[in-house]
Structures are given as structure tokens and as C-alpha cells.
Length: 85
Image (cartoon, rainbow, N blue to C red; front, side, top):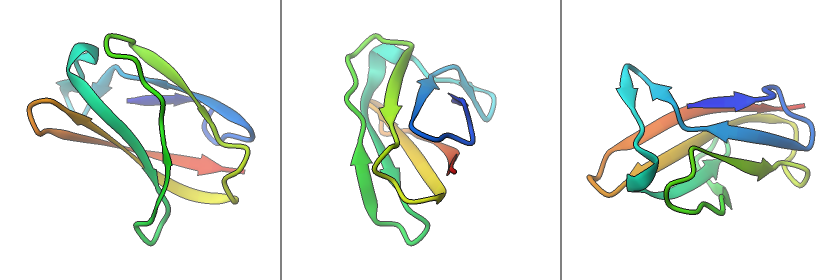
């Protein structure tokens, strides 16, 4: 999974491509969540099944590091690190 831009100021695009040598099939994605460094969920990303990318509005996030978790229908989880300026 890639983020562009990263670090981000207001908005970033989440591109569901490769994650740790595994392909993230956009047709199987069920949820995308954003967590702060202490593990609190701070955002749920609006996602339409089949999209290979989606936009995340980061304007309300405080500066710092965030973990983005993608869940699929097979129970697999994919992770990515996002930095907010």
C-alpha cells in the first residue's frame, strides 16, 4: 500500500498495490481504518469495493505518525505508515 503524498498536509491518496510482497485485491477490501500511535481509531476511510485507490482527508488529524490498516474478506490485514505534517 502506498500513500501519496507522505508526509501529508491535508489529503493523501491511498493506493492499494503491494504490501509486504502480497497483492491487495481491491475487490476483497472490507474496511480501511486509521489509528494513532497509542492505537486509538481516529478515522474510517470511505471506500467503494473495487477501487484501486481512495483519498484520505487528513486535515483534522494532528501532526504525527499514523497506522493505516486495510482489512479484506479473507481476514487478512495490511498495514502502512502515514506521517501527518
